[in-house]
Length: 357
Image (cartoon, rainbow, N blue to C red; front, side, top):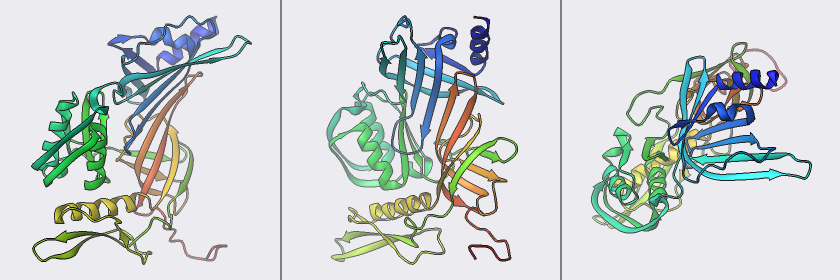
């Protein structure tokens, strides 16, 4: 019992969970098996998963849609890592008596009106205006758009059998942004910009061998997604011709262009579509993961700087997703998914012979 109490006390120093405003961490610590929080820059919702030892079947099931906030502790102290609502509770066990209860939560309220289909259109609006109007109908009044995306103008936008979530995700793909709903807020952030929705530059996360880097698996060069430029077409009614917009891709080895399959509605949409395609090509030109000691400040769209792994691997990478996890021993680690290699990443400039030169 003393050992269990000591382990629970160690765990309490690493996390705090509030459900509907009430701190339930002291009750969770003795039965916590694992806790994971995932924050991704893609179109999927942030997620959290709490796994509990339920051998006595005595844990009271959380109410669906309960608001949950998770804070995790790193070298800087306790920081907010997740806000969302309970989405699923699952029990598993067998006749030996073991029981595990898993509570899952999502950043977006999947029981709310954000998933309800809307049928409407918008005339002569900015991206921000359209999202705000659609958000109000979905019960989300706090809509925030990156300053460089907020004033993009569209003569016509339609929601034809689309939910607010689907509409925001589509607009994000079209203008080179990432759309997410977190709690009662909706955000549209510029892709590959390295900034928060306010325009503030995100912190650089350091992954340094011999200090905080636990492991890595990185491919800084992937040939298949690489192109030299992105091209998008649109019909110009004034000249009765099909015109083209292009966007350069930061690439010095590819010969092929990335041609967007479907034409855009007008010149502005075509230009945005080319820029968005170029951003995605740059993002997928390399990939990998690093595992580091806990760093809750690591955020998608920020930069992870790998130091000391080896020449050609060291360098800056765009953070694509972050997962923080706690195990029963109280250890807290951060796993980071990487993309868009930059600077020295992928370049081994050493001179001399080697098996591959």
